[in-house]
Structure formats: C-alpha cells, structure tokens
Amino acid sequence: MRRALALSLGLLLAGCASAGHAPVASAPASPTEPAKPTTALQYLYGSAEAAVAVRAVNARIADYVAERVKQRPQDSVVLAPGASMDAPRFEPCGDKPFAAVFDADETLIWNLGATRYMAERRIAFDPKIWDSWEKTGAGAAKAMPGTVEMVTALRAAGVTVIANTNRSAANAEGAEATLRAAGLGEFRHGETLFLAGDDAGGSSKDGRRSAIASKYCVIAMAGDQLGDFSQQFNDKALAPAARIALATGPAAAKLWNRGWFLFPNPVYGPWDRLGWDDLFPSDTAWEPK
Amino acid sequence: MRRALALSLGLLLAGCASAGHAPVASAPASPTEPAKPTTALQYLYGSAEAAVAVRAVNARIADYVAERVKQRPQDSVVLAPGASMDAPRFEPCGDKPFAAVFDADETLIWNLGATRYMAERRIAFDPKIWDSWEKTGAGAAKAMPGTVEMVTALRAAGVTVIANTNRSAANAEGAEATLRAAGLGEFRHGETLFLAGDDAGGSSKDGRRSAIASKYCVIAMAGDQLGDFSQQFNDKALAPAARIALATGPAAAKLWNRGWFLFPNPVYGPWDRLGWDDLFPSDTAWEPK
Image 1 (cartoon, helix red, strand yellow):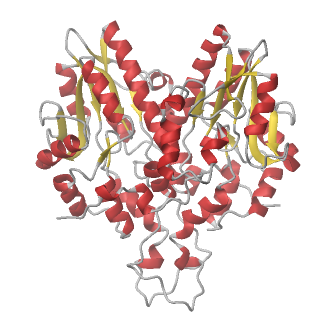
Image 2 (cartoon, chains in turn cyan, red; image 1 turned 180 degrees about the vertical axis):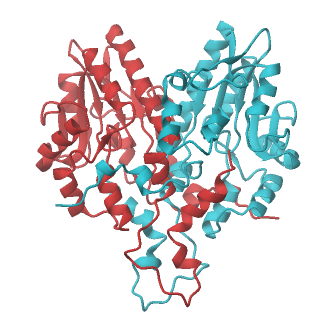
Image 3 (cartoon, helix red, strand yellow; image 1 turned 45 degrees about the vertical axis):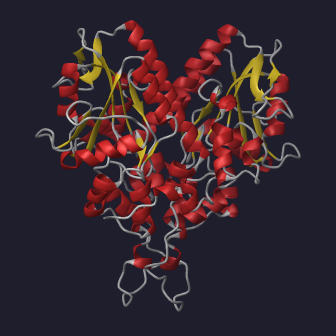
C-alpha cells in the first residue's frame, strides 16, 4: 500500500530539513531542537504493524516449542563446533533437558529508555551511555509484544528460557534486573543468562551457545540479527549478497520458523554500512519520464 | 544484539549531520550532495535479516494455502460488509473457486527504482514522480524474496492470485507490466488486478475486497499495512494505542499467520505521524546516571 508515502518520506527526511531544504539565510536549527523520530523508530516501537509482526513470531515460537517437546528431537538447533551452514551438523540432544535461547535486546525487550534518550538528543551511540543503561535501565525497558505470554508458555511446557546477549558480564546484575522488571522472570548469570565476557569469544555468541547446548537440548533460538544463530553470518569477508545467500540457502531455509526465529529490527543491525548500490541493484535504476 | 549500534545510530542520524552537528561557520551541505540511506532503507532492501523475514512470510503463506485448499473452508478471510473486528463475520465461500489477495507495493514487489530516485535526491514523496513510476517502472521493481516461488506454488494448487493495490486505475497497464516484468506472471485489470478508482471507495480497499469475495473463496490475504486487511484499521479516530489493541485483540490474533499475513515495511506506512510520546511511554523515561 502506497497511500501514506506522501507523509512518510517527508518525515523520513524531516530531521534533515535544515541541512538542505531551508533557505540559506535562515538561522540554523538549534542543536538542542529535538530530532523527529525516524521511520524505523516509528515502525518498530509505535506501529500496530510491528506489534502484529512481533506477536506473530512469539506465537510461532510457542506453537513450535509445544510441538517439539512432544517429539523429543534428536538434535539441538545449535550448530556443532566447526559445522558450516553449507554442511550443517547440530549438537545432539541425548536426554538433556529442553531449553530455548534468546537474544535479549530487541528480542525479549525493547530498549525504550536509552533509545529515546540518544535519538531525541541526536546523540550517536555512546558506549558510556549504553553502559549506564545496562546498569540502571531496569523498568525503562519493556517486554516486546507477546513476549511475556510466550516465555510463560515455554516455562509451563518445561522448557528452560535462556538469554544469550552481548550485554557485558560486568553488568550482569543490571541485565537480570532489567529482564525481571520487564516481567520476564528470573534469569541468572551463568545459569540462564550468558553475557559478553563470559568466555574469550568477545561478541561472538558461538562459544556461549556451545556451552548451553552441552547442558540442554536447545529446541529454539530467537534473535533480531543473524549473529544470534551463528557467528558465520558475521564474517567480515562476507559480501552483502553472499550473506543473504548464506542466510536464505537450503540449509538455513529449513531452520527459519522451525527452530530459528527472527524478530524485526530496522533500527540498528549488522547491515548498517550498506550503501545505495548495495540496496538498489543497477538494473533497477530509474528516473521519471 | 546490541553490538552494531555504534555504527547504526550514527548512520541513522548521518543524513542530518549538517543540521545540528557541523560547526556553524562551515558551508552548508549542498542540496545536491547525496543523502545516505536510512536504517529503514538499509534493513528492508539490503539486509539478510529482512530477506529472511520476507521469505518466512512467503513460506508460511504457501504452507497455509496448501493446507486450506485440502480443507475447503466455509468462509473467506474477507470480513463481511459491516462486520467489525470486535464481532467478526466473514464472506461465505460456498463453492466459489479459491483465491489469495495481495497488496502489490512492498508486498509482492519492492519499488526499488522510484525509492532510490527520490531518497537519494532528498525528494519527499512527489505524486508526479510516483505517477510516472506507476506508468514506466516495469523492470525497475523487483519481486520480493521468495515471492515468485510463493505465487507459483499458489497457482499450482489451483488458487487464483489477485492483487488489490492503491495504484491508480488510470495506470492499469503500467501495473500489469510491472508485475509481469518482476516475474510474477499475468494480472489483468478487473479480473485479477484491482486498483484505486475501480469503485467509489477511494483508497479504501474494502469495496474491492467485497467484489473479489463475491466471486472467490479468499483463503489468504497479505499486505504490509493493516488497511490491506480491513479499512477499520485506517479509521482516523483510532488513537495509536487503540489501533494496536484492535490489531492484536482476540479476533485479529486468530487471523494473523492463519489467513492474514503481514510483511515488514519500516520505510513508509500509516504510522508515519507518530511522535516521541507515541513510541516511548512516559514510564520508560530514562537518563544516564
């Protein structure tokens, strides 16, 4: 549907109005004048459309997990160490208890407090602000739509709910408090909460995933970025088209919505350096006639 | 996952750098200097994450439709005239042939040519440019990821694929050519292609949906905006929170992913006037400590 574009593209560019569109003689916009929210912010945190999409993913996770616990699968959905997407092998389940593994930020919770604070002040991401957010944001982050219901259903089915996030291990208490205050229950560092710094892998979650899969039969994983499923997708040598091909090839296609679940997040992500030519292939060049 | 935020929020605001962040004495940015793509554009048209999400919706549509054609449902998923979401009633199927009804823009096709043309030049939406796009864009719009496969599967199952779009009836030939050039096959105005101007409803698709449901058992509908499912969601009197409540209430929740299918589109939409307080509830106010 295209009807609303007149307004939306206008707002998309509205934050830039004083850069290109205002008369040169006019006073520059005050740096303290609040920015307007981008369409990415409006869509994700405000639209009924995104609320529906997020709830649909949560409902799908709950349905899928309910089916799987009856079937007692042979394998986790965590790739075995060294296994590639082209030749996937998975951690065996044995008789390990069931778990589901979630990223935290923009997967279990929306980081509303810090996001508004930075965006409204036109502050690009500031690691000091983010560190304070990790420590003190409890209560100002919200569970995403349908997430409390989903997590509750999983636990009722006997599935341990685990978070694997790149929040800092130094701020473990803050992460626990943030998830608790969002109504998502108890996550305990080292047991059901895994953080950057827990191992030598840095921001790669592969090692933490392996540690989890050594104790649990992981029947579902969810995130907002492909690195929440395998670090292979974060290989710096992967060109954008190759990354898409890897994520949508036959092996991965079997997993999406069947063990691997992806939430929408157009606000930030590993695609943030893409340029015009990455988004728009040359054979789609067009101009008005 | 939060790791990439340093870059992404930076780029999110990058188009506005000369408004607030440049020294006041420096020359203003040239209006002809190309804008950088917003995160919404990067995510939707360039990311593997969005490609996965779009393919997952297409796969779900194909799976669902394959199930439903075996079951011969009693009712279409098109609301009966006068039926509300609170008390839904649906058009009866009788022995009508099966159809699936799709919005076109950002549902079957991505409008790459016109989107780049306008965004790169910092042109807010221009109805004259869009009119030219409707007429001449064939070849510069692409089928979305997995859409050709989905449409092909539906037709192979005996389901008529219909587009109901707010492109103009005056540009019907262009719409047909655009869908054909995208590899989506034949759509014929008045038979399998319904356009704004076909009836007196303007941009409301309700009348066109009723016309389609009078001839077909509509087993699936898909779009990127809630107006692709019912005009009730476009009621100007609906506050943002009430719109979310209507779209995620019990009646609608039964339909999402089970007859109604929603594609992600953070680039434009009916949520484009939302402000900070709509996105961020007051109880999530936060500042660094």
